[in-house]
Amino acid sequence: MSDHPEKPLKSHGRLTIRPVLQPRDLMAEPPPVRGAWVARVITLFPDAFPGVLAQSLTGKAMDLGRWRLEVTDLRPFGIGRHRNVDDTPAGGGAGMVLRADVVDAALRDAMAGTPPDRGRWPLIYLSPRGQRFDQAMARRFAACDGMTLLCGRFEGVDQRVLDHWQIEEVSLGDFVLTGGEIAAQALLDASVRLLPGVIGNAESLEEESHSAGLLEHPQYTRPPVWEGREIPPVLLSGNHAEIAKWRRQQAEALTKERRPDLWAQHRPPR
Ligand SMILES: C[S@@+](CC[C@H](N)C(=O)[O-])C[C@H]1O[C@@H](n2cnc3c(N)ncnc32)[C@H](O)[C@@H]1O
Image 1 (cartoon, helix red, strand yellow):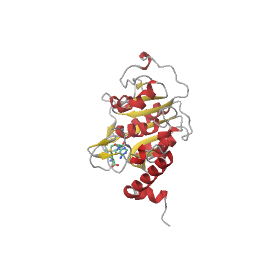
Image 2 (tube, rainbow, N blue to C red; image 1 turned 90 degrees about the vertical axis):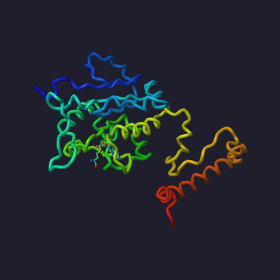
Image 3 (cartoon, rainbow, N blue to C red; image 1 turned 135 degrees about the horizontal axis):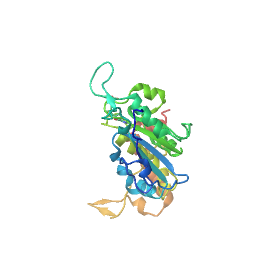
Image 4 (cartoon, rainbow, N blue to C red; image 1 turned 30 degrees about the vertical axis):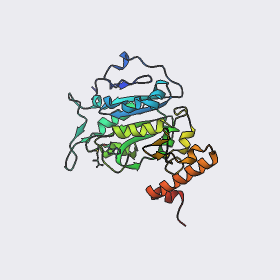
């Protein structure tokens, strides 16, 4: 008998995501959406999804079938009556580690039917040890057919399964989260908003922070005067060339002041 007598259950979503345990054959499969970008997420906390991704632009894009979220609950792949997914670290020390065999079974499920070329379908482990996530990575992911994300918990994942699957590790930043779920949602939000048609005004993507290696210029809206503070007059001048010039200067000044690292890449010192 297999370690996993019950078929591990996956939620499917186009209009809604239901990361609940129900037999797969009792679930109404949404009709396949041709061309939809797909995110598959492995997590011990399926109720955390879709989370904030169901809101605003990403939620609307999901409702419209531009992308789909499929959540794999790690728990049913666990071992024994209690479906244990973790164990104590080899060599001693604090905390628990997600088991290689359990994670492998979930990965086989979540990678089933995906293109073997990781250039078309990246396999990511959210990890503070990974390469720092950035806008270039979001662009790369958005250009793929979809991706699979593994959310860690506890002290992380047994190294052997990461090596075996040659998983790419991606970090949200130089801090430690309790689990990979928030990181996965941040990565997905940044990637999904770059899918064609998700943001109505594609021009706004061109000017926003990190798109052209600069931080974005300051933004203003009504009222024209608030608490004695005026909108910079050039923005009300109607002179588009002057507005573009002012915005560019502001973006450069902000980047130079706040992010010398970005500025050095943008304008290497002579
Ligand atoms: C408590 S952390 C484990 C940290 C690990 N012991 C270490 O020191 O590298 C649990 C899980 O949260 C996720 N996580 C924590 N910080 C993260 C970050 N900065 N970026 C992405 N995922 C993170 C990972 O999936 C990780 O397996």
